[in-house]
Picture 1 (cartoon, rainbow, N blue to C red):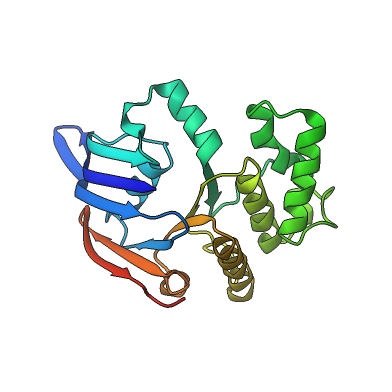
Picture 2: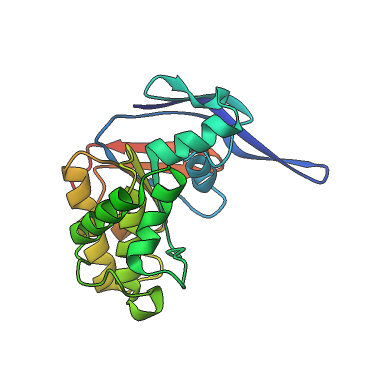
Length: 227
């Protein structure tokens, strides 16, 4: 499904060249649950940004289901993000003036889905994450765990092939974080490909594969780790 080959990402900071990714090659099969781990500055966030089509590699290739993502123009890259990728962030990034239902509808607005269909689909997604009775609540009326569930429902709204989660439990207490991770496990068991970027060993332990980064390189790839 996903194939990186000899990926490099160079940032120019004044007269200094910083290699965020240094020759990364990696394949992720459809249906995998992968944790990308490593210390700050190891390259894991740069990898996630490229994987999600938020940034481009300096050199190297990125293929998604055989498509050369690196060759996409800006419009094609935006369409790729809308169509294929769902994003979940640590800070939820919900719009405070909108209800849970309206927040989940947003990606479908940009995808051109009709009002009736997107409302029906958003309601189904909120039911799926256990918030069917909170559709009209605004983010300030929801707990942190509930807000993250709304964010997950929003990420699923356009039926992505890949769910990318960046420190998804970082703003949650232990119990609530475990509930979110359990939901991720259910989604993965249903066939959704899941890549989680984290520095939390407990979050990484839930994945079936852990890829460890250091200094822009993969230093360990533990395939087949039991969930």
